[in-house]
Amino acid sequence: MTNNPNESVPHIHWPPIIRPRRLRTTPWIRNMVSEHRVTVNDLIWPVFIQEGNNLRTSIASMPGVERLSIDLLTLAVKEARDLGIPAIALFPATPTNLKTQDGEEAFNPENLVCRTIRAIKAAVPDIGIICDVALDPYTSHGQDGLVRNGVVVNDETVEVLCKQSVVQARAGCDVIAPSDMMDGRVGAIRKALDNAGFSHVAILSYAAKYASAFYGPFRDAVGSANNLGKSDKKTYQMDPSNSSEALREVALDIAEGADMVMVKPGMPYLDVVARVKDAFKVPTFAYQVSGEYAMLCAAAANGWLDREKVILESLLSFKRAGADGVLTYFAVEAAKLLKAQ
Ligand code: PBG
Image (cartoon, rainbow, N blue to C red; front, top):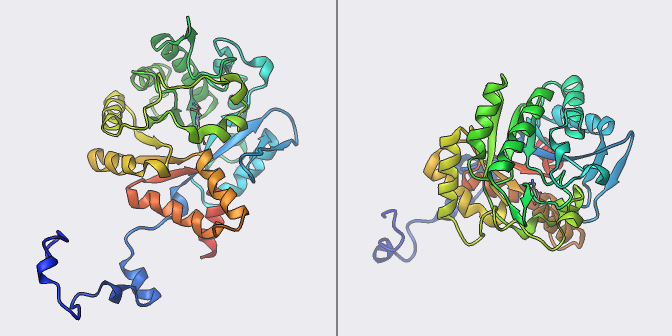
């Protein structure tokens, strides 16, 4: 038989000589030939922070996910570390009164994210901290960049993103993750970090980030949905119809100094994950975004899907596509399931 299934057609026998089912007969042989596996090391946990003390707020469109004040988040992160989760990704819900046209709170060294980084580094120093870089948690219009005459401007935004990156690095963040999709920002941020003495801080770029409707629940979680209103992010996030363009975006980010790249959303874009990993062989991550989380939770809550099984199968699909890890709101639950296996 050749590798091409069509070429093998003339050689087919009855009864069959080649029987793929032989390797599926028992658990031991299935385990022996299994090609991919999810481990706790593959899981990055995105978390939402809010101001206050001893406060937790549930998010209607993300059942089971809560926005936590720093003290409670610190406890949750300890649990994640104890389960073996390597890193968390921080997302702040900025109080409305601190949101402005130009999002200056993004580079305030005392902002919610910076205080959270310091608190977690003090209490749980052995877990990695990844910080988003984009202005949407801080702008009154909910866009990821500065708006001038109705346009999200590129180069002026990148200057602010550089300031935001340096402030987060100074607070102790390990990995800067630009999610804004401005052109040239990875190179500019690399230079800004290096000039400020943070050459050891890594960059995980959201290299292929699509203008997706699957981010809806996240915008509820960070409270940017109302700010954005009916506007969209199509002038900077990618068109869902494109995949060759993703390779171009990734190539640029690698050339500009990205240490790792990300594809986002995840499950509807596994073809992109596979192409990126095949083409570049660099550490490649995928984000199982809020809408994907919401879909699986909703189906499971209705009894239409087996929650635990679809969590693990969905995570395995990322590994099969070539991802080195997954940002997932299921991280803690999945880590517990993997431990119990
Ligand atoms: C902000 C950002 C978004 C997400 C991560 N960072 C939303 C957006 O671009 O509008 C989405 C994550 C998710 O849906 O889980 N730049």
